[in-house]
Length: 132
Image (tube, rainbow, N blue to C red; front, top):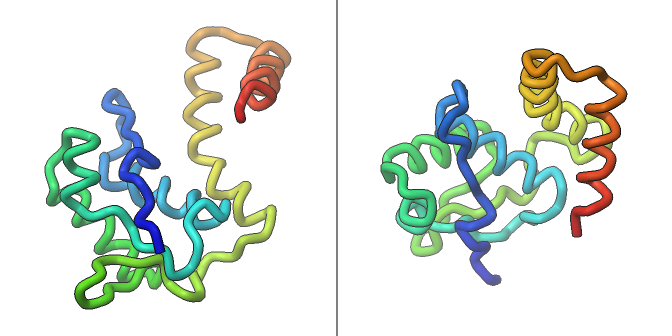
């Protein structure tokens, strides 16, 4: 079982959303999208903190929240792993709900820039097609 890279995670420093919440949401999306599977080891607190240049306590708080929710489990000597049966569903509707906060922030910024919905949707579609 390979340990996923801490580089799966990123933070938006200018965001009003706390860093720990960004990490929690990203971990949920990675699990719901299948990039992190049940039983996979999570990158260590130290590794993520170093990769993102943030306080280790911030990462620890995020992992702790996910553990309390049953998304992650602590295994002695192995650190945190993805729970065998994560509580959130993996259906399309559940995955779309995980994306909603990100899209709401993007929509807010698009309104601030006075962009019309067609322009924003065309840009989003273009970006999606460019992704590997």
